[in-house]
Image 1 (cartoon, one colour):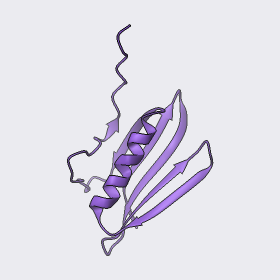
Image 2 (tube, rainbow, N blue to C red):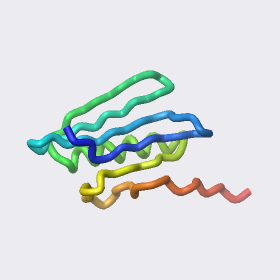
Image 3 (tube, rainbow, N blue to C red):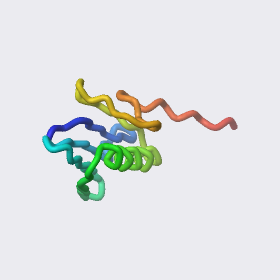
Image 4 (cartoon, rainbow, N blue to C red):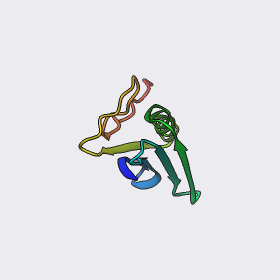
Length: 98
């Protein structure tokens, strides 16, 4: 399987979560999420990119409760969809007014 996207979620310099989005030569997809603190690994196969992408975005939303994501993509991978996380670092959270 080819790795299409890799992302790491950090909080205060600690790696909390690691995500890999992979594509097989026959068009199947897999999302793997590793929770470093709980030492758990979840890998799930998908039949299409849309479903795999939704799963990755759900993982990003979950991780944002705890820290910031750094997303890296293969140069030839251009994901499709209305809510695709941009590569690079998530923006800094905006502090609520006091």
